[in-house]
Image 1 (cartoon, rainbow, N blue to C red):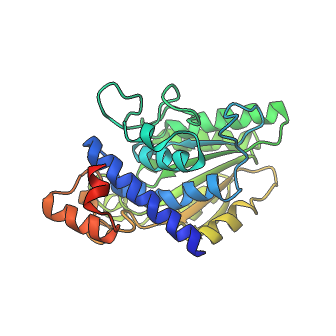
Image 2: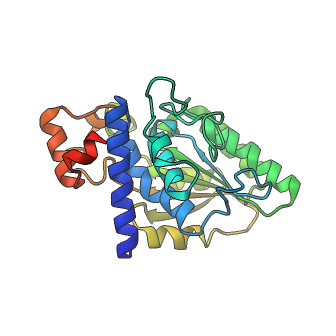
Length: 276
């Protein structure tokens, strides 16, 4: 990963924390595991999109099925030019139009209203079918969580994707191995995600979800063989803040005064930035 990518991703993590903290609610750890992936899709010439023409018919679509990570998407859309910093910082403020989870009526660039876990995959399948019918060469990318993957609708949709030969559909599993109250392995036992997706008829690729270069190379080499593809992106929940990394208690939690100092030090946030 080059220095510019590192600097932008550091800025995005700062933006997520400051916005979430000032708004009084955020799934920070989920956002921090997903941000490198979303950044790569939007900012590294993987997806075809245009903030000046967000409704262009042949655009690629991104669906954040794990909608509680919405701040990661909002922050990237801000970086890509879909909204301003001033708009972003209205997050959860009185009379704002940016809520805790993505909503199509809130912002340009939001393709699906999500947050009810498992449903985003079904929406993405529908989008990919429409793109196939339009014959415009566009793709749909959908990010799901490994905790979310315990929802039955994920697997119903995945069977449909194979039945309709949706090789323009790319599911991204944010495999951070932690869910709401515990580690996934403690909840379900060790899950062989690769074997499970292969058994459903999908192409399976695996990648370090925090390596921008590897992510881009993976996305640019999605097989076109009549089958949908899942990219298992191995990530660390809470990546970037030591007390939050791989710690289930941070699924839905803001720091207290002592913990806030750790966040500010490790994310290199000044008091002035927090005031803004």
